[in-house]
Amino acid sequence: MLDSRNIWQLIADRAQATPDAAMLVDQDGRRITFGEYAARCEQVAAGLHANHGIGEGTVVSWQLPTWIESVVLVGALRRLGAIQNPILPIYRDREVGFIVKQAKPALLVVPSSFGGFDFADMATRLTDGTGTEVLVSDKDLPSGDPATLPAAPDDDMEAEDSPVRWIFYTSGTTSDPKGARHGDIAIRTAARGMAAGLQLADDDRSALAFPFTHIGGITWMYAGLDIGFTNILDQAFDPATTIDVLRREDVTHAGAGTYFHQTYMKAQQDLPDGEMLFPHVRTFPGGGAPKPPQMHYTMKEQLGGVGIVSGYGLTEAPILTMGSVDDPDEALAHSEGKSVDGVTLRLVTLDGKDAGIDEEGEVRAKGPQITRGYLDPVLDREAFDDDGWFVTGDLGKLDADGNLRITGRIKDIIIRKGENIPAKEVEDLLFAHPKVADVAVIGLQDDTVGERACAVVVTAEGQDALTFEEMKQHLVGQGLITRKLPEQLEIVDTLPRNPSGKILKFKLQEQYQD
Image 1 (tube, one colour):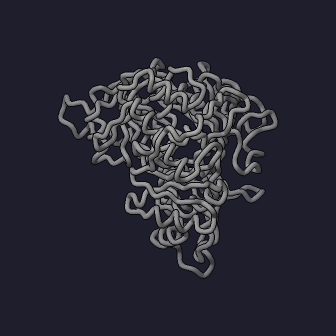
Image 2 (tube, helix red, strand yellow):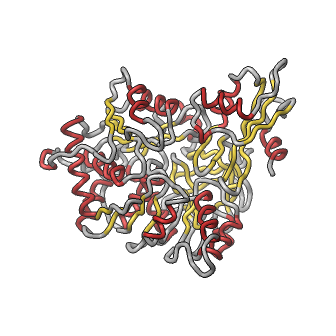
Image 3 (cartoon, helix red, strand yellow):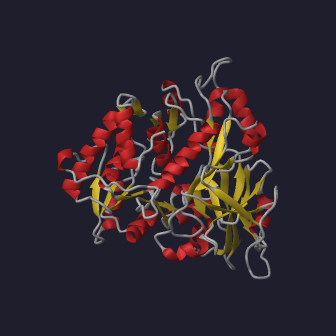
């Protein structure tokens, strides 16, 4: 690992250390070395500075697929000292519109279209009258002469007054996205915690086939720069094509969660006896959604390597814990590993006491990767307790060895394929339908996608029961992205509530869980 003061210096240090080593390769076979990457970052930085006025502290939002150019954009913006705001490509008008209004970026970078969606049109509409400039880029970032650049910021990520360099939005438990502010130290801490658990080495070739705009994508970028291994990019995970790319590139770490692992298992089962899907695989990194314990054993038996090595964290606090390749199978199957270097965990029971060994409590944490707070400071009141611990809203247990097992969530979110679906957002939209008198949206465990969303609806008096197609059309019409649509609809006479009126969702989960 390299002892760099900040992410830009890390890019420069790696380019000097191993300039000819492969940094990135994409689905089309395009490749870029660490030396070429650093040079390209400076060229793009010069173009952004000269043509768009980007400099120290400028907020830049960008919503690009997992492209080599997206990784270059990160480096270019860090060279300039900008505050960058990566936006998930699945976000649409509701989310992006909110982000533009709250973060107030000087520049919004989008592709013209991708996956059949017109991003340029959306960006133009949402920024009209806001002062935000739109840059439409289809792998054609602006370029300029690096000699025209101002001096690179020399901030030290370990300093108490190190600047905020990142804003990552998460849907969380509320209708509106929440912008978590981070410094470079958060990315480094997460990356090194993950790298230690996976025992990453410079000859590794890791799958980065999920949205790069996730904080996890930036974490894998940092790990690759820090250690000198290659990240294999695919612009959108597709079982029909992505697996072939990973096989072609001799993947050694094939992430990144339950849905991916389920896909890999099916592909392995379709191969002739004796043929391995990923002959060079070492681990199957996991996280972002619950994993069935049996999946670890099945993956290890059928696909080789040490099986699933997963971690636990949030956008506000990435990689708080991480499993290790040296952990016993029992720990790998049933837990998310131990707290990483620099992180302290505290589990608090619902009555406010410190939880004992194997006693359930809410997970709270302190560490370098904890968010500096939200863009909306009002949200900080519930995010941190009186003693400064970050309150995750998740329930878990710590065993005698320090392994964390997540047992549930206080936060009312559903995690499908690693993506957060806030129940309240869907509920609020369904309440607006004339056939709906009451509604609860719950998460049901699903071995394929982690959790599936189920809408439980009470029919309004004098109305026919809401149909699944009516529900879908209504939510889409209200601007809900398709990945947040419930997969299941149940009609009931009443919803169970406690004396204070809160819906008892656990009772609904018990009733409808397969």
